[in-house]
Length: 243
Image (cartoon, rainbow, N blue to C red; front, top):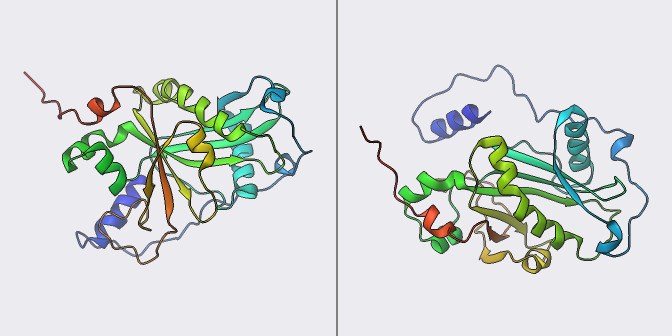
């Protein structure tokens, strides 16, 4: 899928001409089952939930559950993201699923983020892999627990570096997230210590050359540094092989 995305981008740039596609496979359909149906309402305080476990999704059963929950309850539905990614399910002490999250490859160019980091194009190209995008965050609609969202956002920021390193053998330095400003205020992100850099300009995640015809909704840009020296790391010069 990643290669297909790059080839289509090269065709848009006039670098090559692809043959007509043999098929046009849609996003794989998600079969909804009783596992993702609405559950009894969960209320109370954050303390009532006990210890919350953020567990990376593993195994066919958890993958299917994650997809079902997102397809049924997230306002954008289930979408496929290419490249490195990590999905979570959040469970309370009673074994009840509370929320889902997904982290994937960062947006190629975000004006406010790149200004904040004082990135040159070369620095962005070299270190973009150290930024991850929180592409999905869903608290299930029957879960009505005050401060749960900000608690989960703080918890995942502490846990993600080690989980990402276990899978991809390097630690990210920064998380970014884009919050639909027409639907949400971003209060939970601010309460969890995330920094709002402003709003997007309505371009898509992969629009490198201002050629998208479909305008995206404006979204708040939030970032969360994962280590104190993140600026130094993200602006380090490209290492030159020796020998």
